[in-house]
Length: 291
Image (cartoon, rainbow, N blue to C red):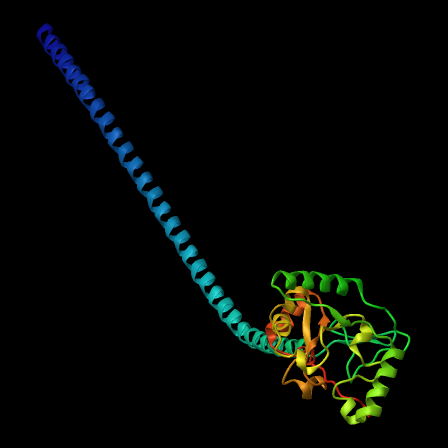
């Protein structure tokens, strides 16, 4: 009985030891298995999140792509719309340009037309006082020699003297009454038709403006003299022009008078001289008696 008890006791103890040993072996395995399961779960979660991220990115990319396509379509529509609108605008612009071009041409033509103003019976063409066969002065217009014209002549005479040329005034300002008597004497002597070629009717004489002078010898003998040639070349430098140049009789209405100078101021005289035109041509006016 004692032997059996001992055997059982020993066997029981051995079983307990084996159970404990198994338990010790199972615990590490369970731990490892648990760790593996956790790793698998973590990987699965990570993969799922990555998949969702890719899916979201793809969705966003798809949305952006659709938006881009939509934007492109809108731009194309806008571009087409602007192109369609630009056509009539371009045509309108072309029409405006043509109108402006026509206006500018009209402006140039209007600028070439004389600006004629009459103030107190005195005619100004482009700001220049005019007395010729077409435009007359009032009978009571009596300014005398204008100081600026006299000063310009004095300067010109001094300049001519340096070149050995002697200039002096043979006839300056003439009143309406004086011209009336002078013209009447010429008519009585040569007839009205002839007198009109070299003498002005009263009110039509440049001498009444106070800006015209007959210099030195009042006759055809003055033509070709050193004084006449000097005036032809230099008078404009002092503000004067040869008022009735050669070969312009049909325009000025008077014979060539190399001795007759008219004060315009240096700037205007320079322009008239450089143009090669007589004053009527330069201003775009005529010189013809009404009757």
